[in-house]
Amino acid sequence: MGFKHRFTVVPVTIAIAALTGSSAANPALVSQSQIIGVVPAGLATTTGVIESAVLNADGSVTVVTQAAVADADMVVNVVVATTVNAE
Image (cartoon, rainbow, N blue to C red; front, side):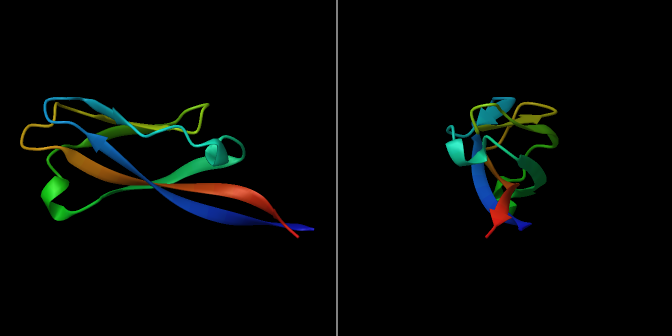
């Protein structure tokens, strides 16, 4: 028996004038999961600098920026790896 990884891309929107944004809860990301990357969803949405990204107990993802997003809503894709049994 071995293990493999399933990758999930979770889009998170940080609204204009906000410091944080969160995704909806995702039960599939609750166990054996970790964030492996955070990337902008597009060039037009890179108006803020990411300070941190957290995978919460309910499987939602929260992203925090260093300063409030000034120009427009900012969308980032958070890549989450989940370890699953390879049967």
